[in-house]
Image (cartoon, rainbow, N blue to C red):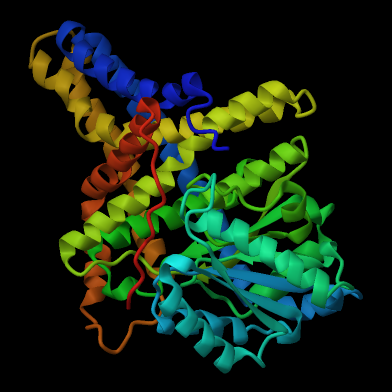
Amino acid sequence: MSTYGKYRKWEIIPGALVWATFALAILGSFFAPTAAIVFIIVFDLYWFFRISYFVVYTLASWKTYRKSLKRDWFADLKKQSDWQRLHHMIFLPTYKENLEIIRDTLHSLAASNYPKEKMIIVLAGEARDHDHFQKNASAIKQEFGKTFKKIIVTEHPKDLPDEIPGKGSNLNYSAGEVKLVLEKEFPDIPAEDIIVSSFDVDTTVHPSYFACLSFLYLTSPNPTHASYQPVVLFSNNIWTSRAPIRIAAFGTIFWLFSELARPERLWTFSSHSMPWKMLLDVGFWQKDIVSEDSRIFLQAFLKYHGDYRVIPMHLPVSMDTVVGATYFDSLKALYKQQRRWAWGVEHFPVMVEAFKADPLIPLNKKIKYLVNQIEGMYTWATAPVLIFILGRLPLWVSGSEGSALVQAAPFTLQWIMRLAMAGVFISAILSLTLLPPRPKTVKPSVWIVMLLQWTLLPITFTIFGAAPAIDAQTRLMLGKYLGFNVTKKSR
C-alpha cells in the first residue's frame, strides 16, 4: 500500500514552511519593513556563504573527477585477486524510446573495458508499449545477444494493483522476473557477487565505469551496505539543447558535484549502482512512488538501521537533456522534469515516521538526514524568490525613508549579490570543461552562447528551479499527489 496520505501532518510541513515564509516576507514588507529588510540581508548572507562552500565542494569534486578520468581503473582492479567473481547486471527500463537511443546505450556498454561475459543486460519494457517494445527488444537481442553474458527481456504488465505506473513499478516487476532467471540459469553466482546498475535507457557510460565500480566494491568495507553514485552528466545532446535547459542541466551537475564531496550526506540520484544483495533484502524498488532513484537508498538505510551509505564514483555517465518538438514544448518538459525531481520531498514524511519507530538508527544520523532533507527542499523553493523578487519588496515599500539600515540596504544587498556572482562565473568556466566534443553540425560560434547563456541564471533559477519545487511541495501539502512523468528522449 502507498504511504501517500498516511502521514498527512508531515506531508503538510514542507509546503507550509515555504508559504509561511512568502506570507511573512510580504506582510513584513508592508507592516514591518525594517524587520523584513534585516531578514532579507541575513538570508542573502546565508545564501552567499552557502554559495561559497558550494563552490569549494564543487571544485574539489571536479579536481577528483579529472584525476579519475586519467586513472587506469582496470589495471587497479586486476590487482585484486578475486575480481573475476563479480558480475554486473544493468537494468534499462524503457517506454516508447526509439531503437537508436537503446542501441547507443548498448554500444557504450559493449565498449566498456570490463569483460562482457560478466555482464547481464535487463531490458525492461512496458505492456502499454507492447508492439513497439517487442520490436526493439528483438532487434537488440539479435544485434547484442552474443556480446554479453545474457540479455533478459521483461515486460511490465499494466494496471497491477498497488502500483503507480512508472520506472519504480517497472523495476520492481523486472527485478522479480530476473530473480527467477538467476535462480534457474545461474544458481552458482552468489548474490554478494552481483552489482546492479539502474540506468535510464539513454545512459552512456565511461569505458572504465564497471572497472571503477568493481574496484570500489572490492576495496570498500562492507560493500553490500553501500550504493555507488557516479557523476551524472546531461551531455548526450547538450550542444543542440535550448539555453535554459543547458543552464538547468549544469545546475544539476554542479549540485551533484558538491554532494559527491560530502558522502556523509549523499543520496542516490538518477543512474547509479547498488548491490543485488541489498535489493533482495529490501524487496526491490518500491512500486508506488515517483522518486525511485532516491527512495531505494532510503529503503536500504531503514532496512539496515542506518548502516547504509553512498560511495562517490568520480566517473561519468552521460544522459540526454529534455527535448520537445518546439521551444515551448522543451521548456514545458524541463519544468515537468524538475518538478518530478523536486517530488523527492515525498521522502520526508516516511523518514520522520520511520526514524521515530527505529531506536537502532543513531540519533545524530536521524537529525542530519532530516535537517539536510528539509533544508535542501526549503531553500530550493524559497531562495530564488526571496533573492530576486520578494527581497526587493521591503525596499520599494520603505522608499528612501527610514533608518540608516534601510537606506544602506540596497548597497549592502548589491555587494552580497556581486560576491555571490563569483560562483556563477566559476560555474560558467567549469561547464566548458564538461562539454563533449562539438558536433560538426554545430557552428563554432555556439561556444560564445555557452558562456553568455549564464546571464539567464536568475530567470532559469526561478522559473525552472523554485517554481517546480513550490509546485511539488504544495501538491504534497494539499494531498494532490504527483504521478510519474516520463521524460521524452529524442535526438
